[in-house]
Image: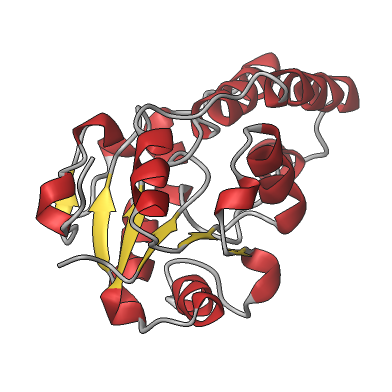
Length: 216
């Protein structure tokens, strides 16, 4: 089927934000003499209500973390924020959808003040009819609210939409909204892939345009 709209997740799907965030957290834990396993981190990917790094550290330590180490982590994140790039294949899918007059939206568990500035810096914000974030709904992923809100903002039935995700929780949210879901795991979420994805791809470079009635 040709979708009436395509709804992208942001973190890990449009841009590889999740690995740098993990590295910053891992190094902050190590600086406190603690391990921070990738296998544990992946369980929270795609959820809307994850704890902040200071909260995670305090839970693990049983005491407030070292403020200097936390500030160093904040500074590192600021540095790589400015260096973030799009994942492979994203630009091509957007251009094909635009050429086919298929509206685009974003449904992200992150806040608006994180998502929109990055989309703007990547030169993508103007392509999206709607950007729906954790700020717009009562329940985040894996609840379907973000995807339902994105479909409503675009003015289409969610069951006619294609969602593009990277995580198990994101896929669960899209499927609960009635959408077809393509999942492109990244180097973190590949450790916890969804069993209910309609299609799993190694990269959006391999997006099957013909399957969805699109011509590249």
